[in-house]
Image 1 (cartoon, rainbow, N blue to C red):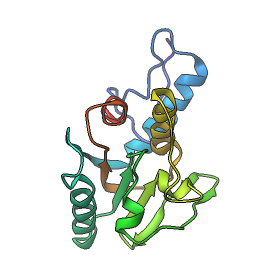
Image 2 (image 1 turned 90 degrees about the vertical axis):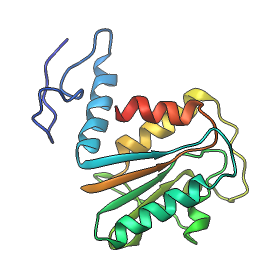
Image 3 (image 1 turned 45 degrees about the vertical axis):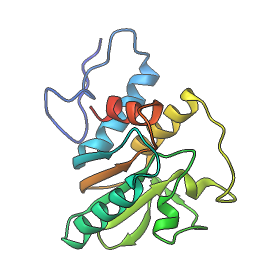
Amino acid sequence: MSEKSCSNCNSATCSGTTQRVNESEEDFLARQKMMENLCEIDHKLLVMSGKGGVGKSTVAANLATSLADAGYKTGLMDVDIHGPSIPTLFNLSGQRLMQNKKGIIPIDVSENLKVMSVGFFLENEDQPLIWRGPMKMGLIQQFLRDVSWGELDYLIIDSPPGTGDEPLSVCQLIE
């Protein structure tokens, strides 16, 4: 194990500062980049339920909007890979993402609200994504590592129904 420091936080307990046993240098650097990104986010809230159609996305969208309206810098990340509804709720269907040297730029909804969803990557919003665990995990890691959220007070994470790959992956990654 090698000791390295996160460029954003000097906390000795930050998991991005220490390479794990059996972790390759490449995996460590990717995890460290993700932790550096997450260090800029004060609070991370996951909206989840075991059942579909109960209003998770509506709650996540309203919570993010309310926090942004109250003056908090807020991000809303939609990890419902098979049914991303956040672009529809915010009337953002058809929006395309941009990228800069810091990473993928989330869509600005307002001065204090940024949104990221797999729906922005689809050619057609009705296009099905038939992905299994490793691809889902990779996308969630990319959203946490490569999206240039900047400094946020809150990141609201809208998850799909159930207690499967997406919510478990998010919980594991954001610690």
